[in-house]
Image 1 (cartoon, rainbow, N blue to C red):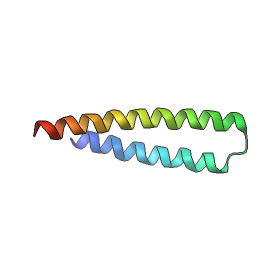
Image 2: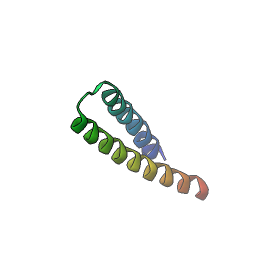
Image 3: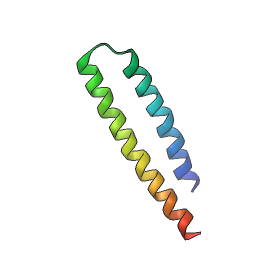
Image 4: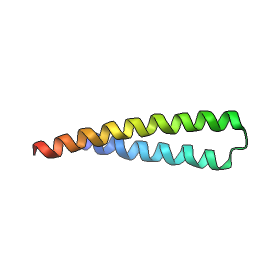
Length: 59
């Protein structure tokens, strides 16, 4: 469970950094890359939430 929480915390920090860059970026190409990075982070976050939910259901 601790690992899932750590993964969520880390992904939240990563997502915040990417979104901050996205807000200040003027290049369309770089924005596309940042949006893709944010999507990957959200996928990892979703997996961590799913695993945490499964752990909590088992308890």
